[in-house]
Length: 109
Image 1 (spheres, rainbow, N blue to C red):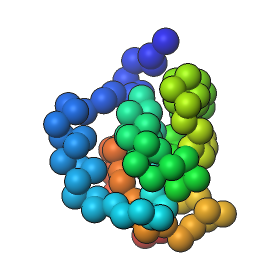
Image 2: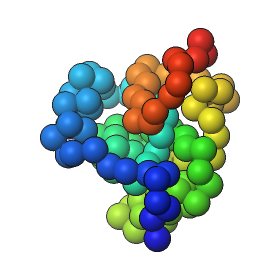
Image 3: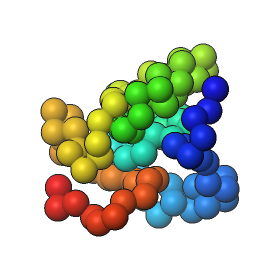
């Protein structure tokens, strides 16, 4: 089930360029704001390991679906229903942050 208008996936080539620009290294902790379909979280989990990947989305149904999808392929990153503007302070600091959602303004945090 996909909720209309709440999630989408960018072209894989664009997502690859975004992840390359993120310049992640072994041991980096990465926060993804806008978990969407879970594609980026899966790639990040594969590269860094689950313990280094944190993803948030404001839609609880999407987080549940992402958790189920990733578990089926053996990944268990930290997935939280939250507003990305609020960060996940209990897991900070992050070495990298990737945002795959729209915002009306960039929050100070």
